[in-house]
Length: 297
Image 1 (cartoon, helix red, strand yellow):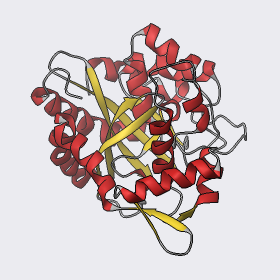
Image 2 (spheres, one colour):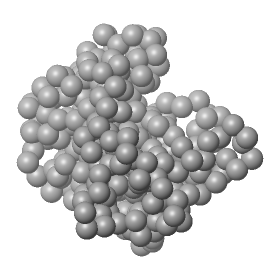
Image 3 (cartoon, helix red, strand yellow):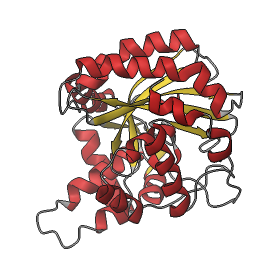
């Protein structure tokens, strides 16, 4: 634990709220590309809407269930049925999707080429995996590394020693930055102007009764992270789930990612999480920073 982290740790029990009770709307799928996200570029003459719609359909097949009909994809994307039909026909012809013969469509293994190309060229993902594996074996908990990508975090590396954690957050999955420990760390390391742009465009969704649901609450959480250089969150995205995250910096000192330890099924206090996991988290972050080149992501 660094001196700055240690000097503030004793304040956490009073300063770090773990519950914000306001039931709300259902959470959205952050892997999707909705029609409204495409239509915002209507005034851009160089924007290829057909390409964007194709990616929208491709992403719609990747999360809900393995087989989806044209009607289901249309409902999920907001696109018309004829548009979805043409997109699926094209994706099938070029090998990214296939028809099951009963009206359903599913992804082909060729889609893995996207993630393989990115991960193979990402130093932070390649270098982090063995360190995360060691951390997970030491803590007997799930551990992750993620980067900020738009409004969300994207997981680039993952290790699970605990069989309790389901694989919903495997490599490539996304979660909103505003209610995750890694997200808070990454947001806290943004320049103030960039952070304000993020906050201005945010849409809150209530995963649990404790999920952050206001800009004021998010700003307060980020300010706490700025002061201690790590983040603790509890029951933000699911019940009986808490996590602790710390930044990963490249050799120039820029925060390029964050790593966390996730505890499921046992609600630990901030002090307990710090005592058990922060020294090991900091050690992994330090070792990773020593070998990361500048602009590692």
